Length: 329
Ligand code: AQP
Image (cartoon, rainbow, N blue to C red; front, side):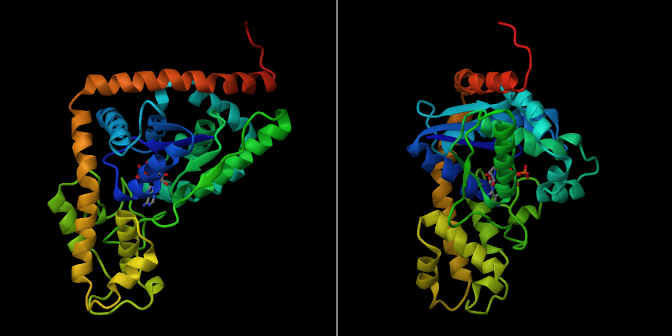
């Protein structure tokens, strides 16, 4: 079984990325051949600084290894090192409609936040479809915010297959049962995001333990004195319950039962903070060690890119051939 997922090179990754991304990558790598990509070509679709992209790409690679991706077992690489991704995106744009792209909610949300809306932000889902389809991917572990893009990828694959002959495996999205949409601790109506939202409510995997504790201590919990009866109506507390469930690997029901008799949210918030500190502590240690040796990190990326180029080549060649391009031997 082939597993593929990509993660943007963009600033310090968050608890949301851990929950919907890294945590699932580590788990799914046990089920087959994992292909994990730092999607740096996606990073230039919104405002960015060149030095920031450079740093975020290396940081993105280190974080994949620090959270448990084994470079012997899985392929880890940066998207811009494998040219097939850019080529596949162009070819797939022939079977993607303007109307489909215009309906993407992430485009609507992100374009509203940009002063300059790039064409790349609009065609982002086509590049993402190419990322996935090039590897004959069976499953794609992702967070809920990527669901619509994954559905579009499936439509693109099916359309290509029926127009040019079966070329792609049609992939399935895999979403975590709990923690598929971690919210900002200060604004529990909005997703925790690397690049947007109140920074006090964004927990970064590399945050110092005391910073993490403070962010949880000051998390918004609807009404402090209220004892939770209806989590649906209380996005702040239900977000914290879900985060606790991700941190300790227990179900939301079990967490609710454990804290049902407690009289206030204060101690619960502290416990969640401690659980996240404990969860991130070994990851931070490994991350620091990986970042301290840039040569070794670059070597891992170089080996990963070579394996990815080999894995993607037959699919890209089949795409060109079936679409009618003249191929030179
Ligand atoms: N809040 C979240 N809860 C659960 N999963 C999440 N993911 C992102 N935010 C949450 C998942 O993390 C994986 C990698 O995401 P990405 O880096 O490709 O970018 P994104 O989805 O656009 O999210 P970010 O972190 O907010 O990045 P920016 O600000 O750069 O756009 C994906 O599987 C995603 O679902």
